Length: 173
Image (cartoon, rainbow, N blue to C red):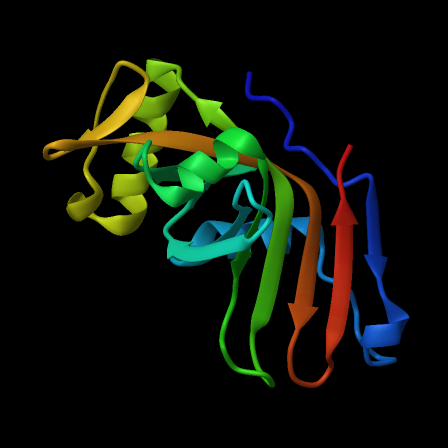
């Protein structure tokens, strides 16, 4: 029997940044947007404290965002020193769409059975260009390999753009 989806312990529409007639979306709607988004921007922190931001694809599965990266890439090296991460998705328009910012801790996924499920999810979402073989706790594609991380949300911010403008915060245990 599948586990019940994780629900936020708090949902709050911030009246300081929301139109008076704004209504906060329900968490399942935010999850739908996370699952459908094709591109995310990941923010990590270098060991010297400088930020690092780069785009990447991600998959929403098992109540977490999942992404992969080469084990020697800057973001992987940053996460080895500091697992706190922010993933952002949305549109680059100011008056239409909905932006989401997911804050959490990146946890390495190393179980081959789970990685096979995630590899299948990547291919369903992004097509056969993103076909991965799984072995030794990594994704393999051509001559390279990638480590996979899961980010279960601690806090998610949602920004409704256009009338009505809104800012919603969901907090998780």
